[in-house]
Length: 191
Length: 270
Image (cartoon, rainbow over all chains, first blue to last red; front, top):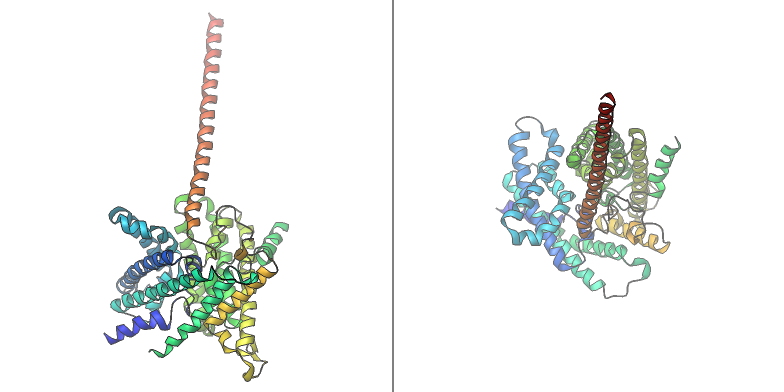
């Protein structure tokens, strides 16, 4: 139990997926204009990454490893993730219309999000078992959500401030992200 | 030959994937802690890009349109696996410093972007040259960023110490430094009004509404892209239908003419 908690905190705060691993930067910079949309994106990411890390872990443990084909992991994972996102989208559209309406827009964006593939590969590199993989997936995606919602909050405030001309647009967002990244170094003493 | 040189110029300068199009930001920020890492990452991406463009261009008439993206991804992922195994075998130190970012070349938007916007429409040789140009542009950009960060953060150039340790600003080789370097770079582009995706003046790719620009993607562009693609498909379908109709009319007219000729002939013989 203690070990699982350490994995979750470690991947959510200490090694935050965006601010220290640089995975999933495109949505982090792109969909962080408003707190509402960024929270929606975060929820979709939590949903997909948790399912994807569970499925990828099962496939690796029960199909790739016994048959000695672990070198195929990259190909298998990317195809499984792409298929999974499509499947989740269709399932939500059919069975959970309200959830689809709030998350649906973000789902296609997630297929090419490197965080999803990154989690699946990290789980394999660190030799996590099924439960550890799922916990790691939840931790990483919660970390992503925390980072993107915080950045969106800051950006909403920046809108009303007088930013020097050359720093308008993405430069000021990147500076903000850098400062947040420094702040997240404060968590490194946690574990 | 001229066309191939033009592809190289286009990739390295005019549409540089990092400085102008702002594609593939994840590896750009993550691995540029030193110039050597930048070169390693850039060259691995170049290798994948050249072969994926070449193979996809050869297969462009075989792959059905509906399943082209999964097909491209399979080609790219196989090439990435080959490159990964080669690096693991021959350059173990580079392998350990790049780590998880080698398999993540699969989801680098430069590769899928070039496959979709260039290799799927052009012949294999110029697609391969397009890959070389884009790859070299990426390598040069990563090396420059790596050089800056290594010089400021570790006081070294390609591992050679040139600044004494007391003057190092070590934050530049840590994660926040990557954000700061990129932000200064984009601010300079704003200052000199250089063409760049960050100030909306990048050369746009015509097939997509967003121009394949990830940095300013709001997600809304996807819906617009779908609309545009659907419009294009509808237009093509309408064109095809018109052509079919014209062909049918022509055939009908020909048939009528033939019948008339036959009738005339029949009249003559009577």
